[in-house]
Amino acid sequence: MIVVNLDVVMAQRKIGLTELAEQVDITMANLSILKNNKAKAIRFTTLNAICKALNCQPGDILEYVEEEET
Image (cartoon, rainbow, N blue to C red; front, side):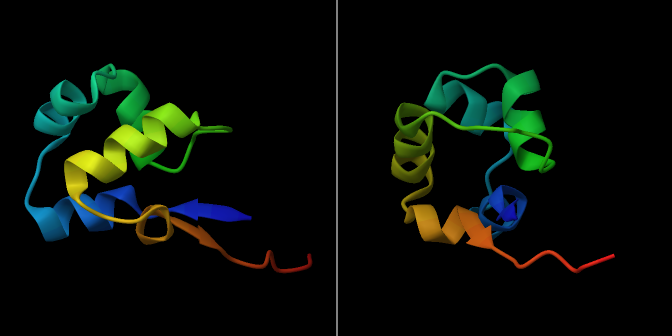
């Protein structure tokens, strides 16, 4: 599964949800869904804007983790 580490990168950059939402031009609700790992998809344009605002690479935000078998 893909894990979103947006909260980690935001903390490292010392940027809050409101400020990032304004810079990326995304609603705080949608950014919060992404930040809390609840999103089912992300547009490349949104990912591009987030990476530009946070000065990071997509791999800093997205991580693949194998799911444990139940």
